[in-house]
Image 1 (cartoon, rainbow, N blue to C red):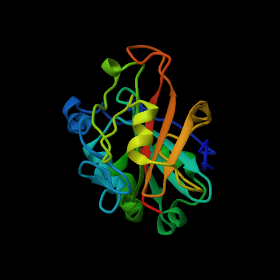
Image 2 (image 1 turned 90 degrees about the horizontal axis):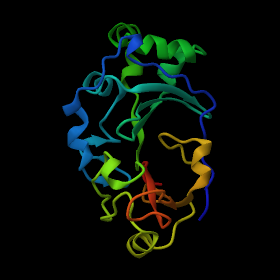
Image 3 (image 1 turned 90 degrees about the vertical axis):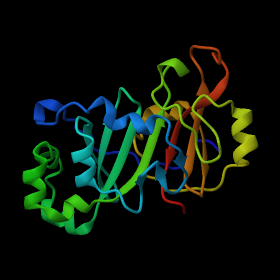
Image 4 (image 1 turned 60 degrees about the vertical axis):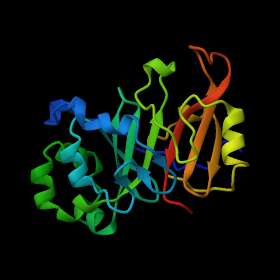
Length: 221
């Protein structure tokens, strides 16, 4: 299945530590380098049913923030060096408070304590999607874990097909770290809550072979 309909960001504005977010402590993300990426559920103890925006930002400072919009409004927290991205969706009670101030929202989140004190409903925005991306080769890739189907980044296409079977008919996905750059991949989506993006490896032992380059998970449909 190639490129199911993805709800892409219509706005992306980034903030760095200049807006008050300190770099992420090296040990904050370390446990997730080898944690299981479970379709429809989460990454390790970061779960769709329990993880929310305010405690996440407190525990994992230093991410690049992006406001994303479509039918809903969300906040992405991206850690480029680790190839990790997390999408949180703002509910109606939050968006009614901040209104159309999407760009200002990101600036305000750079002062998270004051923002959440003024807009407490925004702190409970739930985690909706997680993505992990490969580096140019396995030795340059932060995420070395596997999915619950026992598939890692750089898994050969044959292994993906053997483990997951035929892709399903999955529509209207809103995935962490979605961009037009994903169009270079063949996308294999499964309703149980996982998408594998397959492309040619550019370096390392798998060079020129079709391998899993990116994996994103979302609540099961």
